[in-house]
Length: 202
Image (cartoon, rainbow, N blue to C red; front, side, top):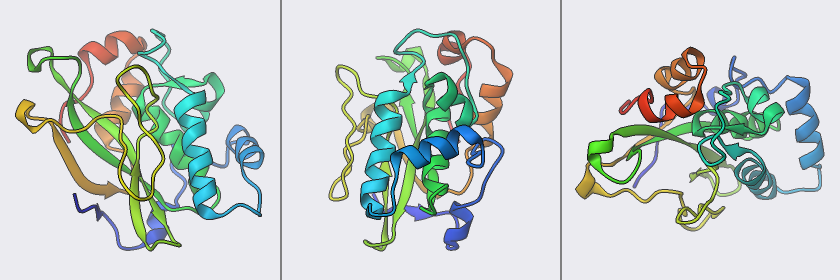
């Protein structure tokens, strides 16, 4: 699939947002811990991706009711659903000047269409040395889900199954979808939110 940036201005993918709060002390401390000046851009992207994927748990996987939204919250509590985890990966990379945006898929929540659909968030990252965007999914791996860092081919958490009306959206957005953030801000139980209240389309 050909990725389509929402904006041709890479500076739009470096802005600080309310939920991408990379000036927060926790984000700055983690960035300083993860990165050093000797690292290549690709090394930094991989490190940040692996950290968010592996060290910040997906709320559903650990059956936690806590709802996190801002990047700093996901980092503080080390948990969140994909909406919060994508905010965190964006914050870490934008903090060191790597353009990062938001991408979406429409997926079945569980195993059948009857159980409903949800928007799934992943990230688009601009690799300057390659002069192109790649998509990364830091949702978190588990049996049957194995997303990896790759600059040669996409290895995402969820391959799209068109026969079940799942969908890949090609646009790389500069800001997270408003419905996803509103969902996080209006719910207090992550498990109920995950089952009943996730938006199902852009």
